[in-house]
Length: 411
Image 1 (spheres, helix red, strand yellow):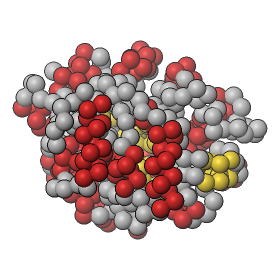
Image 2 (image 1 turned 135 degrees about the horizontal axis):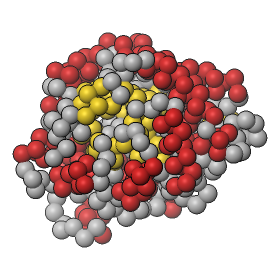
Image 3 (image 1 turned 90 degrees about the vertical axis):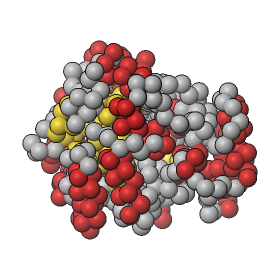
Image 4 (image 1 turned 90 degrees about the horizontal axis):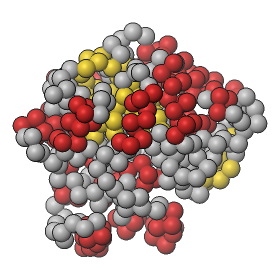
């Protein structure tokens, strides 16, 4: 069985082929790491994972979506080093995802008008967006390289570049958000130009002692976005640019958010924690139209991922609907992927990997009601099963979703 055998991502060797995915924790404070963030990742490392990934760290001020998000800068190297040292003490490797949210932010967090591939209005935020000038693109690409150097100083073994899900690099790749008429717009080759510039800076900064993964879409998940053929071209270009591994994902947060995670968004739970009344009630009234559900099934990205496995020669990381040892073994030993990433399973059970090792029939206790995702937009991500008490209205919503999913109505 390969699942529990060592494997490499570039120059970095992992003790096994499991990775905690870069699912946003929402555990930062004022864009800094916290003891809560440290304790969570240490629990995952202690739980047997090969590598755990700190999520969604902004490369500069304009990159930030939330105050609970990390801003990867020299000022936070010391507390990050405490986290990476702790992860290493349990035998796991440490990775950090870096990216720029582009149009998925607000003036208050970004420090100015949100920027993107093109000028327009992002209904999901909602906010007006300014298209980036060409001179700004060079600076942002250098920010990606600087973030890799900062990650090395903080003790990280790997960096995951976020090039999917409708964030900035993805906004340049997708014809839905890229309406430019210069050399960064038009053909897919032109739309990949910004990605190339970012990756050149990343690989130069990585040198020969850091592993570089890239999260990339297999589909944008809606009509008018990138489909399989275009995304496959992007993946091949990332391999040519030197990425050591690709994380195969899909979806577009501002257009098809549940395509990324699958299932139903608990709208009441999501809005319960929102401090702005206008946003709270706006989302309650229109959220079901803005965030349509996408049916959950185990290994929901596998069919598309097989296409990439047949075409791409570098290591590939499968993510999406891994909730049991059978799932993980299938992905690695039967389907031929090199690594498997898990998010919700490792929130529900930080020791999920050790439990899989001990029991051939182990399945995590996640019931896919997505309370954890709804909560993370305003508070830290948490599984409802770990909380001592929840408001009755939230519990009713959870039970209703479980009933619609065909699960028994139990707490």
